[in-house]
Image 1 (cartoon, rainbow, N blue to C red):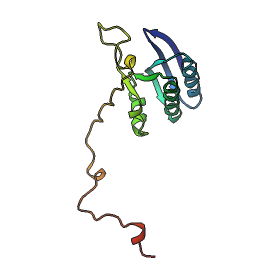
Image 2: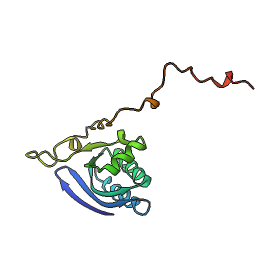
Image 3: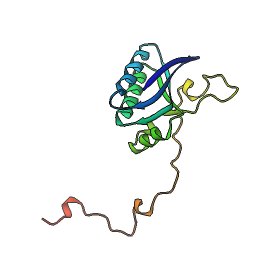
Image 4: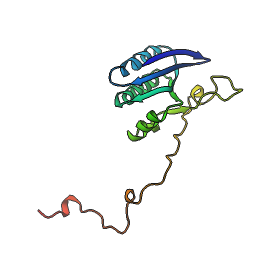
Amino acid sequence: MSLHCEHEGPLTVVSVHGEVDMSNAHLLVDLVAGLARHPAPRVVLDLSGVRFVDLHAVRALIEADRLLREAAGGLALRRPPRCVSRLLHLTATAHLFGVDEGPVPGDAPWAGPAATGDRVPPRPATGALSPNSRMDARRPPLPSVREVPA
């Protein structure tokens, strides 16, 4: 994994490239901890160069978000690739992070939700639920613990 910091107006953009896993996820937390020492830090993690993540990466993102919030700042994820989005959805943590798709052509590079601290609602999942994943109203409810014969 490689990390590169640059400033876009009031934001610090950290570009992450490569694989974020057990061997290096702590480096991301260490970098954000340093950025959290500044007043009201706004950090955008540009994840477009990430090829692989594991649960250690999710934990690092949660910890980075916590550190920045404690410093009255904020965190947004920019252009997360499918491997990141998928793992965030599988771990039910996608709603924790704002997603910044990057600057709109013609706008200042720091314009957008990441600059204002607004959370962007997660994109709806595509595809319908399978019939087996829904509760079937015709099925009787499962017995409670007290109703189970001894």
